[in-house]
Image 1 (cartoon, rainbow, N blue to C red):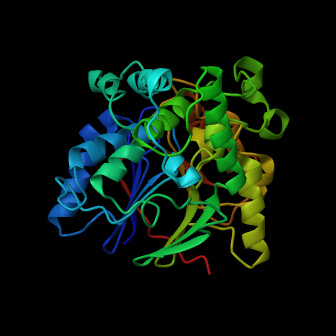
Image 2: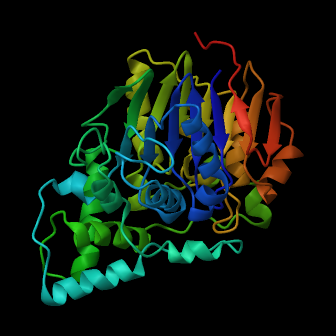
Length: 396
């Protein structure tokens, strides 16, 4: 039996997959997501004698990474974990890009990095944020916690990049993981963004990996202004528009650096799209399709919380699944967008789709009252935070 849990992570992501002793955590939402929900599940797994086979931090964004920071702070050293043994962690940070260490800067350069460290990650915007979220902004980056804790990081010491170029296909225990994002180009974009933001502040010191620099990389990337056109305002008449009329591609550099994966366990295949760019996903998926890889999955986690900037008609023409996972409370950017949900269910299908949303939102309410234009059957499950059991017919 394969099970997936989609946690209530505010406007963020947090997923736990379990299958015959393999346990994979993808993102961690906020610190409160970990404290109130994830922690107890991990303790139960540990009590059963199992470990976390893999933790994936898809990209440097507070709504994905903050809960993982809370996990590592509470877990302590990898050799003597306080909550659960963690076999592997995937997290692309500065160390994965530059590999070489550099001397810690002094003088003005050091003062500047210290000020960036003090700022930390962005605090949650959601009105239901807990006080501990603000304190979680302080302290070390995820990269430093992994280094200090001695975790198996990116299949080694963190100097290898998890990307379509370096690690296209990885086998961990009985899981086969196909990496479909990011490309090396997108990670180069992220490094250039960081250096640009540093230089804007007048920093002229080294840019290699180190304690202060690792922290500054993550905190500055997480706080960097988005270089992206604002998505269409989906109110009144716009809510009635079709996806192909309003789709506009995401160009947020941190989103483009997302680790997107196809996870195979047993005969089940799940597509986890993080916050990835559509064009990058299409490039990799078309390559797999041309090699005979089926684009019908058992479950799809939709990209970027159901934003119209991260799901295109072309992507939906290529992929499908009986289960869709949409993670967002809709409080920051209004995700998910109804045109995305409608485009998913409007397609003909020989199976009944289930759309799981971890919160009740205006878009989910509207979808529950909608009838597919193709007549395809679907069910909307709101507040879907319980285990989703994968008892589906084989795709073969």
